[in-house]
Length: 164
View 1 (cartoon, rainbow, N blue to C red):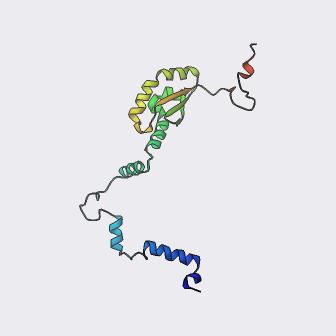
View 2 (tube, rainbow, N blue to C red; view 1 turned 60 degrees about the vertical axis):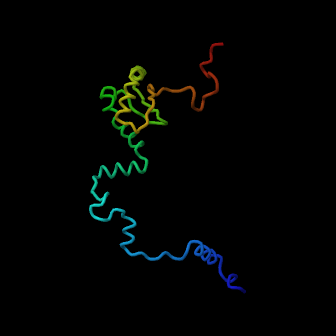
View 3 (cartoon, rainbow, N blue to C red; view 1 turned 30 degrees about the horizontal axis):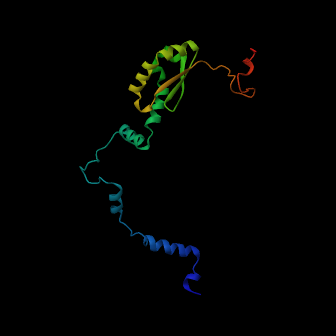
């Protein structure tokens, strides 16, 4: 039996990978590792100044791509500041999907009034929360039963089709 036949499959794969990628990496000293990890390790070098926690968090959220989601959450949380206490008592933002802010209103009259104010609200949102990406606002009236969904729905006009 030759040497290769006696070796296990795992050792053959290991030796092949070792030949492709080289042997074990040379041990580096602690200082060399630190220089690789910390680009600005000399005093008075750019990037060595301390930064505030706010700056660090802003850089982190930008790097991870969370800006848009954070602005959306902030917009929903600050709805009463944006529209005023009276209007906020009669309306509630439900969610944001594909650039459309959905707001549930206490009555259809409030939904109509807010539809008339849509452009002003969009302008205020764009100024305060530009990264939220709000392009439109949908105002819904209060929740009412729908004939279109549910276990007893049928295609077509359904139970309202009584005019013959």
